[in-house]
Length: 115
Image 1 (tube, rainbow, N blue to C red):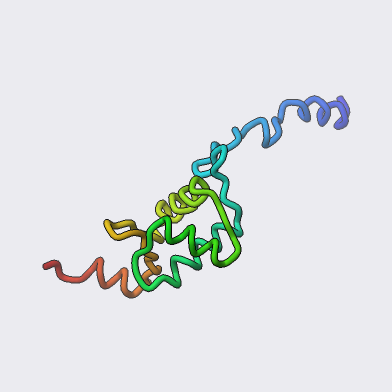
Image 2 (image 1 turned 120 degrees about the vertical axis):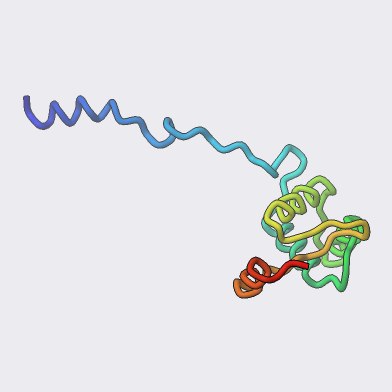
């Protein structure tokens, strides 16, 4: 048997990557709620620049003032994404940006004494 015959025979056995892996199921993108990267960046900036907690209505108004409108469903999808990443918190007064803690601070919190 020549190498060509062996190569051809095994070539059909190896499945392609697309056959092995199933397509991922989107967690945040849903019909009617697909925020663009631009929307995500606007929401991120609005949250980071806010002086305190902001409501969803205020976020939509801020985006409108900046000349960028979006649907409430897309805003909620973006906020869900940020929430799952741990970068925002929601309280009774609204949403607030939670800056990433430095490694030293995280270590101090982990090792520090408890009250």
